[in-house]
Every structure is written in C-alpha cells, then in structure tokens.
Length: 295
Image 1 (cartoon, helix red, strand yellow):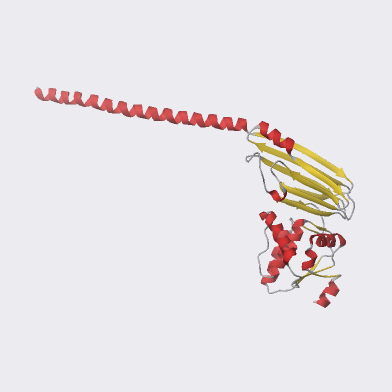
Image 2 (cartoon, rainbow, N blue to C red):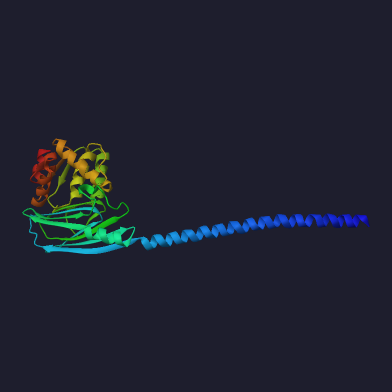
C-alpha cells in the first residue's frame, strides 16, 4: 500500500512543477507576441505619417514665338528629359514636378522654381532654376535636401535652327529628325568607329553633307570618335556634365589632329562647330572628292 501512495505522491509533486514551468514559458511567449504587435503597429503609424507628410506639386509652362533659321535654341536642364521634334514654328512645353517631405514645402519650392527664358539676337534660351541650384547642376545653399525638382522639356524646332540641348540627369531625345547627330544615335556611331579601329583603320573621313542637325551630345560624339581613333575610351553621356567638361578641355588645350577629318559640313553644323571651338580640332574639306585626294 505504501508504494502506490509513494508513486501518487511523486506524481503529485511533479505536476505542480510542470505547470509552473509551462506557465512561465506561456507568459514569456505572450509578452513577446504583444511586443511584436506593438512594434508592428508603431511601424504602421510611422509609415502612415510619412505618407501623409510627403507632398508633391506640378506645373506646366509654355513658350511660343518666332525662331528663324540660323538662330540657336539653347536649353540647360538639371534633372529631366529633353525631347525635341521638328515643326514649322517654335514651341516649348515644360512640365515641372516637385516632391518634398511636406505639401507645404512642395508648394513653396514650386513657387520658387523658374524656367528662365531669354531672347536675343542669337536666338532663344531656356534654363531650369530653383532655390539652391546653379549652372552645371550643382546645389549651393540648398533649402531642402530631400526635395526633388524634375523638369521635362518638349520642344518643337523649326527647320534651320541650331539646337544646343543639355541635361545632367536625364536624356536628350530627338524624334523624327533625318540627318541628326545626338544622344539617340551617339552609342551606335561610337561602336561603328570602334569596330573600324579594331579592324586596323587609323584614319577616318566623316562625310557630314547629309547632317542637318547637331545637338550638344553630337559634339561629344565627335570628340569621342577622335578619342577612339587614338585608342582611348570615349566619354559616357550618362556621366552628365563631366562629358561636356572633357570636351571643353579638349577644345581649350587640344591641337588639330589628322586621324579624323570632316567633309561637306552644312552651314548649320558649321556654325555649331565654330561657336564651340570644336572646328579647331578637325581638318575640314569642302566635299568628299577633295578630302579623298588630300588624304
């Protein structure tokens, strides 16, 4: 009789120990669950507050006027694409978007953002400007580090008008323009020249008689062709202003080279080359026959 009682006593003494142990573990689990739920709720509240605080503003500026053949259209943008298409008369539509940590700040930045427009004897110029920005895309005394200003230019360019289009963070695109040298065909042209160089060619004649339009990226392309024919790497258009700085340095310190020569340049393209000083880097011939005889 004593053994069963001992066994029962032993069972009775063990059960309270297990319950106490399980109770402590359950309480710890419940506390952990509540802590996780509280953290999740806090994160949701923070996310909702951040979304509520974010603000944005949009605006569209339009410009129209007379831009005669032989004049120059200059556009300097910092962030956003520039899209150009041919047409009978000049027009520019600029879509500006501002994002900021709050709607109030977005509205304030939008009110201070300007598309500067200037007309003179040379042509028409447009430039994106907002507080804290200056030429070249650098920001000085920026009142809002978390604000972002994007300006998209849509241009209609009349025949015979030179175009100097620059944007740091974005693309320059030219639609439906025959005989152009710009960002849209920059890489293809560079690759073709690289193939010629790899095949052993060391002298190149560029016939520009059919080229009627040259954007700023086209100038970089010409400089890139010279670099490739010298065995160097061409500039990267995605690097923004550094590509234009490399071109400027080449014009300022470079001498006329003979590896890449030009022929048949049209008046509009010739004006662009002369105004930028890039003509000093090239031997230029009036036509293909004269160039072949000279080379």
